[in-house]
Length: 245
Image 1 (spheres, rainbow, N blue to C red):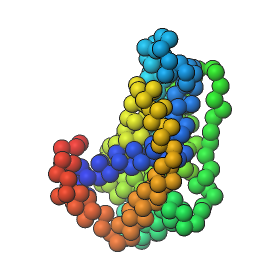
Image 2 (cartoon, rainbow, N blue to C red):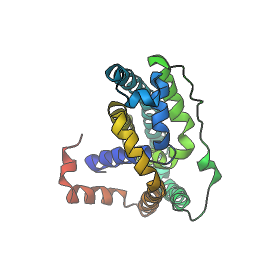
Image 3 (cartoon, helix red, strand yellow):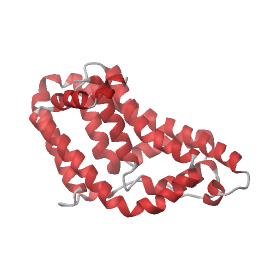
């Protein structure tokens, strides 16, 4: 499979996970909780520089936490994929069918209750601290899997087809970066981000439909065995992707 296009797809999938309805609305309270500051402190003028530094450092530890889990999943996916290499012709269509079902859920054709389940933490005034923020990041990766799992599952499915564990690790690292970079930007520019959130909330239904379309398309590619063809098409259409990785 075309490596650059695959990494770009993983990074884009991470961004799509970030703007999903189960992640994006919770970013502001998470930022405040991780650093032990209020939303007013994030946007106010009193000691704003110090507040921003605390928020960014905590956000970085949080991102490292969930990245650890996702990268481990990438290694595990590739390892299992290698063990099942002889069965990929059968497992590919099955995985594609599951991904299509999840896509139809986000498109609103029907609803799968499991995908509404997520582990949320009670936000209080106690700061998490850097170690605590890292541990919360670990828990985030596990607790939110039912909600972001459909997109994450697609990237893990691609990782399962890679020839080495290293490639699977890199693939999930790019996914984690796609999810983590916007989170860090939100920490750096909390004021503009909160203003953006007020306007963006009304577009959440459209984001769900985009997620659904992405999943259905990917599922069809899995079933038809055209994922590699799609990757090469991306490279031909967007040559800049060749500079990635």
